[in-house]
Image: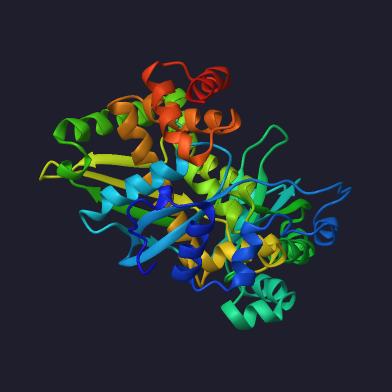
Length: 419
Ligand code: MEV
């Protein structure tokens, strides 16, 4: 295929879909085989990834279609176990296209390493003393990673905070490090350890923790999209989504679920590209907790023309080099399908997918409710489990949904009646 707008893509066989995606993304037969053939991650490789390995674990890889981000078409690989998510993302991306798709930006590949210093008699004086010696501290950090320094400049800045705690005030130094296309955990942790003795000298205190922060608020990706009222079913739908957002913005119980829906889109891309989804989750949820209560990651508003506008801003501690991305053969194939060349581009795609996924859930919730769509996909899964052939599938699903009896037993009963 030449475009990611492919009508009836879901009706193709798995082999046909894979072939279309391979053509779109320029994957070789060997590369697409890493996804279509089981066992891409061999036991030998897996045995080196974590400890006490006894095997590997598979999940489906789907592709979200229709995404137009900053004028570029993306086919987005998503690894997850939940039905409806890929279809919903594709559908939302289609609706966003009426007004030009998604627009994104990024603050840069800056990660934070924290150095915790306790037992400081005069923390505010010590804070300034650290800042007076900023260049010296950055130089010590950068000595640890000349390759990174050559690529990005490495450690670039310092922040020093006084954090009140139950054991007294702590002087917390943040090293701001440009980790380039790597997520950068190893690089920043090494730097944090290297500067610790100097921090102790400058503060008279004792350094304890030296570790990155997942609240990567210097590595923010942003995305916006306008959904025209015509594309999404009218002004009532616009108002419905705005009201659904107002609920999430005001109520942490609802925000948790709304944000879970956003992570339905984000985590599958993070996993597909071999990145650390726990780090991503930690970053997002802590970012939503900066104010006086936990709130929505997205914002939804009605513009002057009555259209729906959405925006998202989130920490994106992800990379393309280092970590599992370079080890996992399927992750490499997914990165190639995605067609991203930098961590910055990956982060912005992730932001757009999160916004799309949130829109899809909010629209469904504000109109029909989500069960209608869910039930159809759930019925497809159950009919397959019951033994329906591809030719029988549509008829079995239609009958299950029409009769509101979605179960494997009922699918078997329908199939028996079709013999
Ligand atoms: C289900 O996985 C996700 C939703 O609950 C998200 C939401 O409520 O916004 C549908």
